[in-house]
Image 1 (cartoon, rainbow, N blue to C red):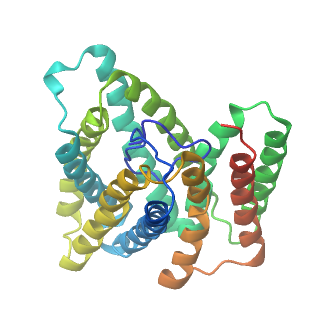
Image 2: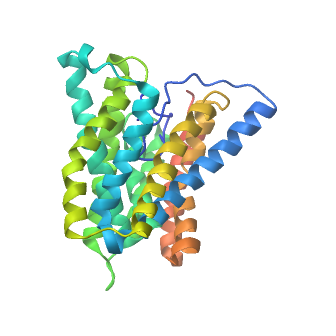
Length: 303
């Protein structure tokens, strides 16, 4: 989970080690970092698409449960949290982070089921964008906020087929992501290394354990559905986490944040190619406006 978000757009709803020092080395290292970012983004969105294939059997709840288990296994292996040494001042933000992490992924996957991958990820992306714009007093960021608002209005305009519950779930994911960023800052200051992230992931997995059992009892899983859910956990949690560990050692934070703003576009493309979730011109315009607002905010930032 993110302990130090990129300037305007931290990555996906997945634990990530942005506390790693970012290098600015030229040449092959930076090129490798860019290639890793591309692979990480595609892995994350492909994992979400594959996970959605298990919805008919497991539902979003079952898929998210499996994803939480995979994320916990990876982060605990890397972070190795010393839970017995945690004080209450360290525990309470970790517990809140665990709750937000689970709610964020559940609301996102539920939104994906109803409105598709591209729109769900775009709405979720409003969380980090709002944090970035709210913390700035620059005129250019006011303009970025107006552009992003226009994009949201375009995406959520009333239509006969509009799924308002799906849209609301996407916005809930955005609120959770914004909370996730703020909590990560607190956890990063109070808990050394990746121990806080690992502890939160483990607690979230424990919270989802009875849910996973209940889903399995009520809807016996098939091998294919479980495989899709595990793939979602690996591709959307493990791979991006490890990729970001490498990327942030070779790519400046601003470039990292700028690339992350492309994730809604990647999600829309993966949804269109992999799931047949085509978008119309207005939807693409709305996604483009939100991505452009974030990109403009980062490019014009002095930090």
